[in-house]
Amino acid sequence: MPLIAITDVRKRFGDNEVLKGIDLDIAPGEVIAIIGKSGSGKSTLLRCINGLETIDSGSIVVGDAQLGEDEAHLRALRLKVGMIFQGFNLFPHLTAGRNVMLSPMVVKGMKEDEAREIARRQLDRVGLGHKFDAWPDQLSGGQQQRVAIARALAMQPMALLCDEITSALDPELVNEVLAVVGELAREGMTLLMVTHEMRFARQVCDRVVFMHQGRVHETGAPEVVFADPRTPELKQFLGQSA
Ligand code: ADP
Ligand code: MG
Image (cartoon, rainbow, N blue to C red; front, top):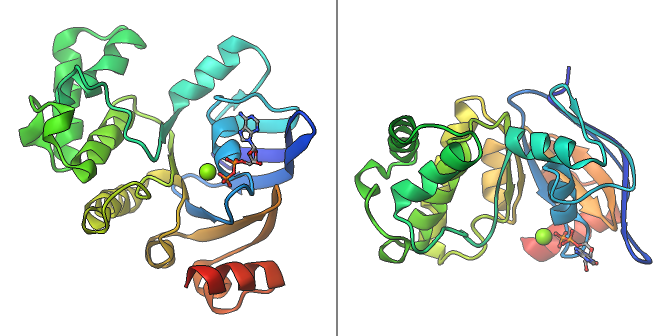
């Protein structure tokens, strides 16, 4: 049974059909890298999976929750799937710990003490237990992104979606964030990440999905896809990003 089953998903913005029938099944614990040119629909796909966008047709099932048009379904989906973005989006007026506590308290109605306990545990998990009381602007970009990961983990998601989470970081800060993601992968977290870090994709991911013009154009194990791309589009893409 896939944890996430995506079947013939289509999405358009006006005249622009951005997803042209996406089929993708993701097994529990699977780690998938989504690669492809800018504008190929990668972010839109992730946003559809966690219910930030509605889909025009097809279906997305996460666990046993079918994505429907209505708000209750979308909310349920957002609770099950965590998402982390390129910008860290921490609340600047809240400490690192308070940023992590917020959703469990507001969305799940958790008591403050329990939320604090969870926040401590998740900040520990990303190596920032000692930064509980730090303000976002006192943290490096890499540390802020790790807080954002802790914040997503605090909701105990079934899967994590990462959209170019290292793209805004200075090069020397990329590895500390990738190390955290690699550790989550080893712990068995289901991960779907849009990334330009080909070396990371090769080392950590189980499968690579190459998107081109709104379709899954080519997919396979990293050692196959990177060494022996079949389509001219993927060859060209890998040539450019090598
Ligand atoms: P990628 O993440 O691969 O760069 P996106 O999913 O962001 O691609 O975008 C795919 C296409 O959808 C682009 O042509 C983009 O302009 C368009 N698009 C994305 N979001 C919106 C939106 N909210 N409204 C209109 N067009 C959008
Ligand atoms: Mg994008």
